[in-house]
Image: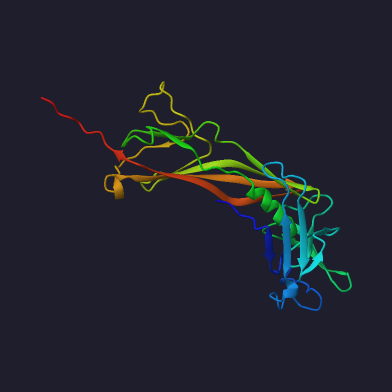
Length: 287
């Protein structure tokens, strides 16, 4: 459903993508090993261990992050920023002008302690040491599958050329929050339902930007939903089992923030599928 955090995240060395440079920059080695040439060398392995504290939305206060390069314990965060998967450190500017996915990279020579390969780079996700904390907060989010309802009811036959109303049950459409804490830093993750894509089962799909409008008895059964619905024009009798597969997919806006940092996670969805029968009313001739 969404990303699952491994509390022992082994992240091999990788080269960050530099902005506005003619060629990719070379990541420094660790010790006397050139990790750009031999990225699988054990000396180039960045290991981030997160022992979480607390559960649920508060994240607790006893979490801890341990970072190692080639088995040697190093700082997870220093004055340059957070340790990345390429053994360099990634931080932000003091004025907060850099976008969420742009970071200032500084690589340190482990022998001399000098900084090298300084520059602004783009990262698809937070640096490794920070990522285990943000991922932990996101993993604690409870994003339920949509509790869908309809009129005519989903358990009853749907009728061709009669509008069907779709919505999610009351109280479902709301923000979910969770948090994770380590080293005095708390990251809070938030998930807000953004839209529902209804796959009607007859080959059509309808995108609704809200929870839909519940049908009430004061509304004529032949009236279309003002916000979210569909009108079937063919029956499901020629489909396997004589039914359509109705599927509701909710897209979530997932963001995280804490310690002056923030970011987002695209592509997180939850869904519910049910079988429905679509038929037509037949005239009965009596004498």
